[in-house]
Image (cartoon, rainbow, N blue to C red; front, side, top):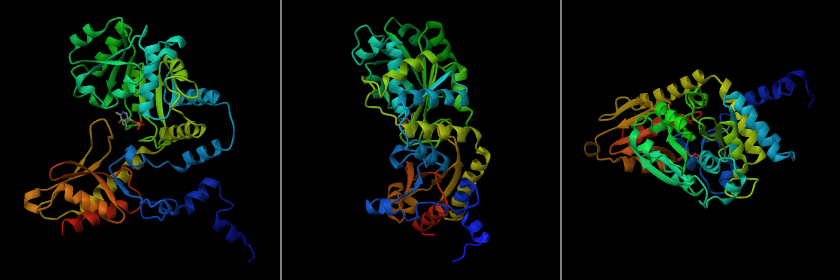
Length: 396
Ligand SMILES: *Cc1c(COP(=O)(O)O)cnc(C)c1O
């Protein structure tokens, strides 16, 4: 067949690579066949839970995949790459310094190791042993995150306090770090500014775990600018970087102390490896995130919320609402509520029916007669499918 100019244009051969890919790329969703997962006997699901590790985090945009692919083709001095990528991310996120970790949980570990060893290589080598180490980490009772093991496995002993007075008297010569769980700020007696101030006055570094809190995007620099010495974000959540990546941002001396606390260096963090692909992928994700049109993305999320609510409109005994969580995962969700005894249908049963369908649908079940649906990670027709299936389950 003769190749005409028109055919070449249609095939996208004359378009820049990105434009051609955007034109041709099908809207991938849970209903797009995946030979890879089919071969493994894994059924892709509609993610109505949000950015969670157990469902695969988030979906990387093409520019992130492309960066990982290019990174994968070369050998490079890895510690040098980590420093260059860190410097670039720090610049983009207005932080004094930054490094890529293999997740937010790993950032908690290497950040804690840096605070406990205070930049002393001999102390770092001794972790998790406590001799000569400032091993106590103070945390408010309401700020328990479930990630305490990440500090304890580095040798930390968690000291729990509730009031400002308790915090001030708990600080002593063994205190190495003050831990703050960003999303717990409304629940704690000691608020963010006060917590930072106490850390500064007493010369103890403060760490803020904001893993799920990169919405709005300005949060990525807000907490370092407020004065937290270390701030943590997941790479595979809102940022849509590689699932196995995370960010540790903060004070230059602490990031320098944290680098040797992780692979490729031996010791406490050797098991936390970050590959060249994750480093370059996360950098590409940060570059995208700081310039992407968040308002357009927000409008897409709103339209998916509206689509599910509309599908359930008029189903008797069912109330739907639009819900935006405070701080973590701060994007519109859908709540569905009903009286279980009146409908003869429990949230557990609805949940099971959703998961048993094709494609399976995963949502949150926060209580009796209640579903919480995150539409954030839904693509293509997925929100429509969810609305239709719920309507069927509720017998409408
Ligand atoms: C998700 C999360 C983590 C863990 O993040 P990973 O990137 O999966 O390691 C830690 N802390 C909080 C508050 C989180 O929400």
